[in-house]
Image (cartoon, rainbow, N blue to C red; front, side, top):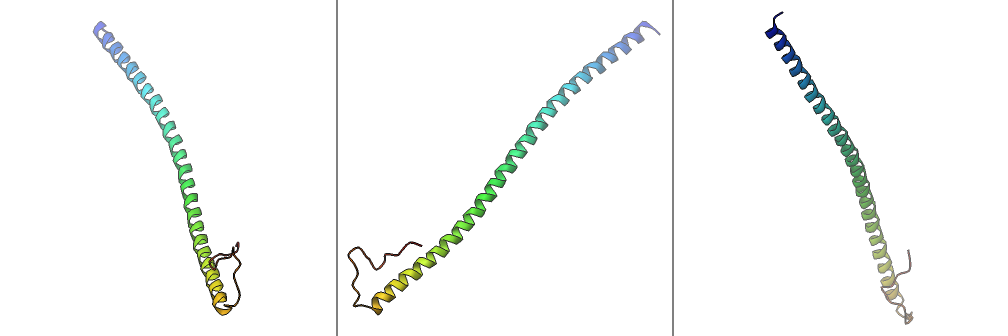
Amino acid sequence: MSMSCNVRVLTLSILHIFTYMRLSAQHDSNLIKLSNAETQIEDLKLQLDDALGAEDMLVQLTERNLMLGEVITSIVFIRFFNIYQYPHRKLRKCESPLRTSRL
């Protein structure tokens, strides 16, 4: 082999080594990015679960609120009905026709 051929082979070998080192560094960097992305995905999944749980709670509380509103309407109606049915019954000072007992 001639000297110029050896120099070319050595030059190519050095280029391959630098290319390998650059690709190895990129690979390491990409592994770190992948790990960070996986952590973010897990965090987002937890946030989504929390949001869905809050939505379910909101639906339950809305339904309960509507039901309690109907109960209050019924109680008020019954109180007024009793007042008109029994007008001779006097209300105590602290009693109001709209006042309802605890549920």
